[in-house]
Amino acid sequence: QVQLVESGGGLVQPGGSLRLSCAVSGRIFGTYTMGWYRQAPGKQRELIAGITTGGSTTYADSVKGRFTISRDSAKNTMYLQMNSLKPDDTAVYYCNVYKAAAATHYWGRGTQVTVSS
Figure 1 (cartoon, rainbow, N blue to C red):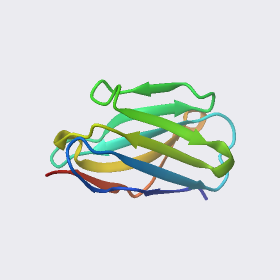
Figure 2 (cartoon, rainbow, N blue to C red):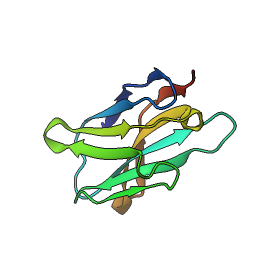
Figure 3 (tube, rainbow, N blue to C red):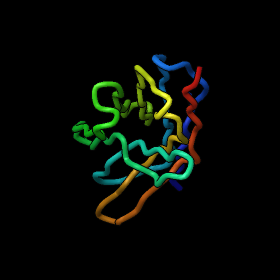
Figure 4 (cartoon, one colour):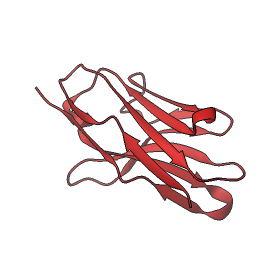
């Protein structure tokens, strides 16, 4: 059973930083992509950063240059370093693992990030 647990969310002032963590338990065989999504009130969930098993990364234009995705395979943990946060970054942030060969998504429960003065 694969489980994902996010942590690190909270309230931060504009211009501040946060680091989200996603701890993955259970075995995922083969290749897969890990990513961070977010969903703001009244909006659809959107992919903001992804990282492959090979370490290649992609970012949404809205976070490029401010957010950095990384992973520590030894700890089975993925991170999202968020800098220069803006009020528009306020959302629930979700950790995701996608195994394309099985067309299977695994999701965490999300962690709230609020950017406000």
